[in-house]
Length: 260
Image 1 (cartoon, rainbow, N blue to C red):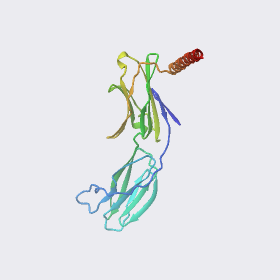
Image 2 (image 1 turned 45 degrees about the vertical axis):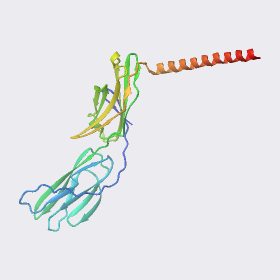
Image 3 (image 1 turned 90 degrees about the horizontal axis):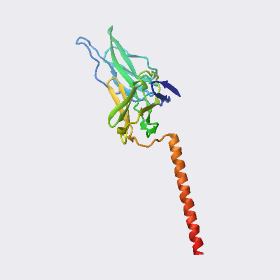
Image 4 (image 1 turned 180 degrees about the vertical axis):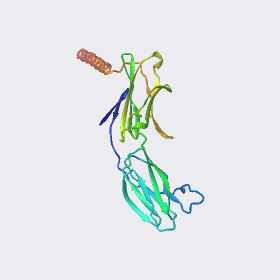
């Protein structure tokens, strides 16, 4: 378990999934000049994969001479498959949010390359907002965002009646883990807050790709449901039920005695 200290408490729990191996698909040709007699292709050009999974890239060329294209990347390689003018590479356990792979081929002394980008991310499995706790004239909200990646691109927002009351960015977190995040926020209760709906929103800003998830709404109630208040309310209910049982038992005994 990992902890991240920000203005508000955050809980991070690491967990990696295990992946398979998608098959490569063709993609458009790499841009070439008018005088170039051959092309180089790397497909697919954009890959989106869950963190920890694997992906296949196909590196190919139209060079008529016997040549084998090659792949350069910082990602870890697995299996390979080859054919005339092409090589497929498996990239395993992708855990970096965004990576680049380059396909190189040389034909008649001229070298060209094509580029592909591999993005690893996972939208939150769930966004859960606990019922608000009111104590000492303040509301405490606690929102749980589970199983997401990358955490450093996450922004958590709390809305009251459709208006933003707080947001927190986790851009300082640089870990490469699938994680859970818990956000806690406390604010002073006002009469206008009573019976307002509150929601929690998680947003991943992934360089142009925006992934959004939201919680079910909860209501700001009037009672102070602190742990002490809950215990007192429970004790009062138990005492009240006990009194009712005692009165009922006494009445039943008097009724039976009268009939006898």
